[in-house]
Image (cartoon, rainbow, N blue to C red; front, top):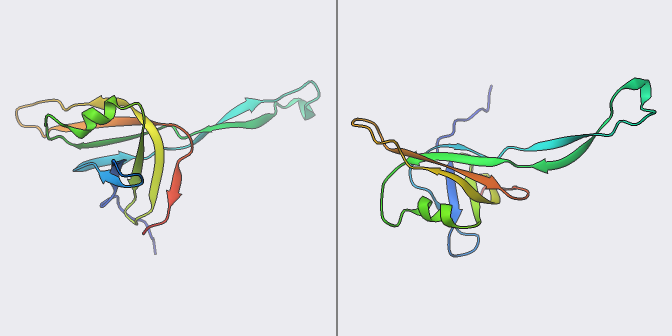
Length: 138
């Protein structure tokens, strides 16, 4: 029997004015948490065995996180203000309550396309800086 789950009840949040207190972004539609990659550095030398290239593990990168949300325009819109900040702390909460926290900064913020019958949906991308951390459900 599978233990697979769906993304319902996931959450993207931004650290508020109180440290380690995260404020959820309203009506998030989709979240892509940061992934991880590692550089591969060639370390081949003149006596590498059997004339095969050798590689060593390089630095890791958590990449970017992105999310989209139902857009509700306001003069104090949180995403607009977050984009202007140099850096911030962010949290993705998975449906089972496990949290991934990371430091980063907004690299993209796209207000919605306005169409006669379409839902207004905006998107944002955050570049991570450093290592994301996982935290147990509370």
